[in-house]
Amino acid sequence: MKTWLLSLPLTLLVTSVCAAPHQHGTAHFDMVLEPPTLLMSISSPLANLVGFEHRPQTPEQEARLLALQQQMQKPETLVTLPAAADCSLSRVLLQNPFPDNSHNHDHAHTADEHSHEHHAELMAEYHYVCARPEHLDQVELPLIQLYPGIEQLRFQFIAADRQHRVDLQAPQNSIRLP
Image (cartoon, rainbow, N blue to C red):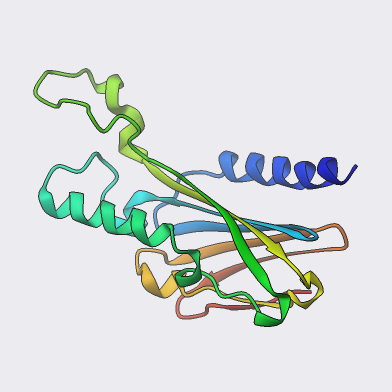
């Protein structure tokens, strides 16, 4: 039963995020709590984070994308949970916006072949185990200051007994959970 409860909000969350329109300047940060598990996901147009949405074409763009991927592997720099909740990271999933890195660009392409690259998204998912989830009463999101291309951060929190949704705008980065 517990697995079903966890998968239901996550399924609803993924459905809502995937259905959200690709909007420059807007990113999504979602949290689902089914004690002791806390799942968090970030979804954003790549342009908000590195300034472009196509496969990197210069060494500078390669470096920006690599730095972003490294940063996303460290959720403690993107979100701060209350220490009292005693949450520990158990898993990080980062979707590569350009899965075939060995692709050779020396041949001609039709417009449709790379249309998916013109609206590349970054999606990251973080799994935590929280020893005292009842202390999850506030979240800090330095992510919004780290990436000035994020003008609005749509935050959503879902738990069995409560839910919360708010749109943050920089420099606001603190959320009180119900």
